[in-house]
Amino acid sequence: MPRLDRLLAHNLDCPRRQATRLCRHGHVTDESGAALRDPALPIPPSALPITVRVAGEPAILRVRYHVMQHKPRGVVTALRDDRHPTARDLLGDVPLGRDLRAVGRLDLDTSGLLLWTTEGALLHRLTHPRYAVPRVYQAALARPYRAPTEDLTLDDGHRPKLLALAPLERASCHPGLHVPEEAECLATITLDAGKFHEVRRIFAALGSHVLGLCRVAYGSIALPYDLAPGTHRELDLHARFADLHPAPAEAPA
Image (cartoon, rainbow, N blue to C red):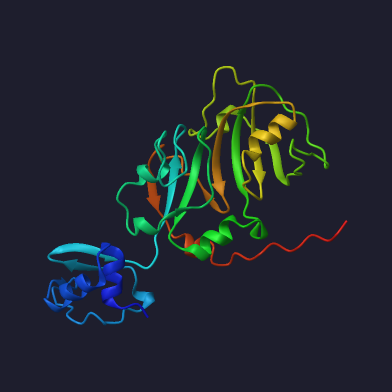
């Protein structure tokens, strides 16, 4: 069970000794104003997150933190980059920020839903191909694409698994999708994995070219229409994906 001093150190990004001193000197209180002087005070996980006051200022204590972000174009999915702004920079000062990691990646010119979590095990389940979490994208294309065949193969020999591919009406486009004037075709595509530039390479193999690309859903989580590019919102990924299990293995051909 989490101890008060460990929760304070983790959430305030301070040494545990400092958290212990804060408790013993009466600087940590509950919402009623009662001092929490025992640094070893156990906090039931079911009670988290909780709000305490540290030197009079409110502090929310958590063991996990999750975020959905609307990543804009021109931003890389990285913790740091010397040439481009990063999606992590756009999050700013968020709780447990030093432990936050992106769930997969969106390339520089792709916008849309980017999830972040502090839970390593959850991150693994959301990104590993065994769990086959569907990703939905909307694409603006330079020209119409050919219908895919079962033996569709990309330039490196990879055979992608398309869960869905369908035309998209302009009226149904997510506002986060960049649609240049020269775009002749719009489409929605769903994959069960997120390999390097896979959506762009699929449309190239189908005789088209991606001009704009936006991820609009990851599993059961859709990109809200009112979440502006560059902004983020907290959500409970742990609860949304609590029942996620590996996909059944395909029978050999």
